[in-house]
Length: 354
Image (cartoon, rainbow, N blue to C red; front, top):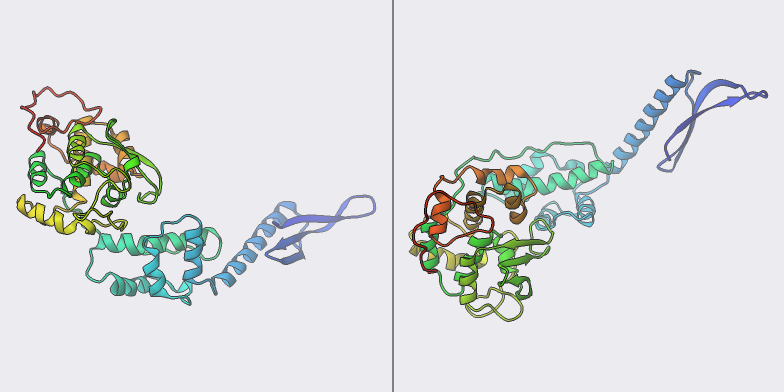
């Protein structure tokens, strides 16, 4: 319980002597004089004393609290787990949380993520360590510490023009075609698409429910897709139960959150045949959807909602990429999004689905 102050009283009930601090913090009982009869000064001394005791208790805990213990608390509190396991293996069971500083992070980056881009190191190493450490700070176990993030180059966000998307679609193998159509039309991440189940795909209303176990944000999200995506998916006859999208052998994909590796070989083949560069990856289709959707609708709120972004700054970049004639070009290629604004430029003849 917090400390408090009081004064003794004489036989007449009149306060006498100095104010006294009393109470119990962390199992330690406190009963001591402030040395002053001034209540305001005594209250300041009480607050200072309480802070000193809390700091001492925190330092005592931080001397023994391990990274593994702090990580477990973080996971139990609902923290994102996908990048924590490699960190636990690297730091082991005995590394104290207070011993993890920028130099320790540098060594971990060299061991776990050598040669990878700064953005990857920030996302897979520094962000989870910071989250684990900050929770320990909130719990009073350690004092605040700032970890240096790697500078990320601000390069151009790659997205496909409707003509490039047509070429990619035309080069997809049968099992890859509905996946690409869904990614282009809904903007979901690859792991979210491959984890989609038949009962959560609503072709009649052109919607799909993304489940927490496949979502990066760990929450339910209903997404939408245009008619062209619906026709491409339906034409490939999705499975009647279980996973919607399947391997060439008819098996469900093994889910690996945050990765498009399950379809990498087939996607690379289609990309090469479509004469697209190595900068086009499955995740490029998410950039493409976001750029297309905003250009067609000018609806930033729905862009964030459907895309599953929590920070406006993340989605904001897609509002600045498209030329003014993109909405008409999208309609000409059959990509009509719900809520699309009318354009003054008459669209060209809508092309065939494939």
